[in-house]
Image (cartoon, rainbow, N blue to C red):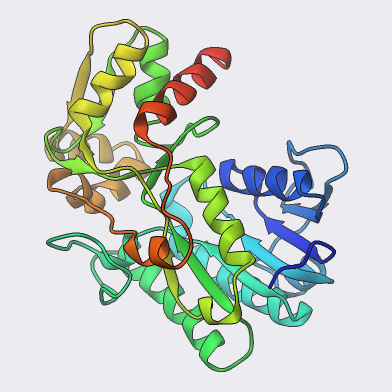
Length: 315
């Protein structure tokens, strides 16, 4: 189990990485944050170092001395995933193995591909498309490393997340940010399809929970406890209601994404994920709740906090 005195290394300083750093630092733990630039917006007293985990030697130096390594990496564009992610996963595994540390991987749900019914951790890995197939490949990499006894790994899998500081999300700039600015919210697919969202503070709590868990929690994946799925139409309405405004929503169809993809690589990459937004996308977290906790943040609390943050950080 992760101890209070051991070094906790966090790779990445996006919303999840910052959140983990802040939580661990507040608990009095030793924290090192690793970014390519060597810069991060973290509390005073948190060590920040520069490293590229896609390079094995650099990853080993970054993880040296760690008891736990958190992989909280978010790439700004889909277009580089296939080239960059396998090297980063190899580096993460090499760094954690070098340090004799546990690796807690902040994952996603793409590896399941299109499914009918709720998403559970025991679903088979999919080879659908490019990004789901890539996430399946990354999963097999860490599962093999764990099975071979080289490094203890657990994956924490939230659904699409939202919350204070979360801009690159389907409930981020394109919905809450635009609503705060008095603009029309942009959504994908069918607004009537229920969709699960994970609140970022709950994602952070889940990552730290798994880091502190017993050894038998490793070698497997865990879904983050989240509020019940609601249609995007209802979520957008709640955001505007919090602002005291009438909802305004624009829907991006497959045809519109296809047209936008002619000029924008990310829009082109997004098309293969549209299945997440055209039918119910419901995440089951009963496994995590039975073992740890299930008191997720309700939308009635998470949405007002998210709107408040966007108001305070309006651009």
